[in-house]
Image 1 (cartoon, rainbow, N blue to C red):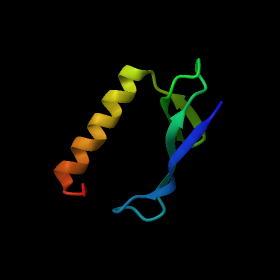
Image 2: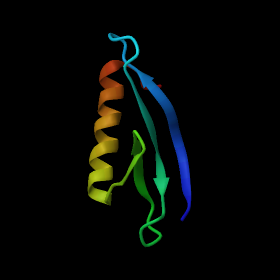
Image 3: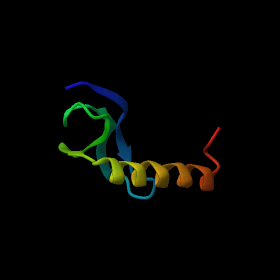
Length: 71
């Protein structure tokens, strides 16, 4: 299995002090050598199928654009 990590951080709640979630995500080839999105949330790993991975990435791109975070 090959993975490429794109993000790994403890996310801190902007409103509530001390409220955090550990998040990691990237690309994995664990399932049949396919490149798929993986998420690790609070130590629980999810590998998204291609359809769900596309939905997830599309939503993240749309949110980034909406918030003006895109470059």
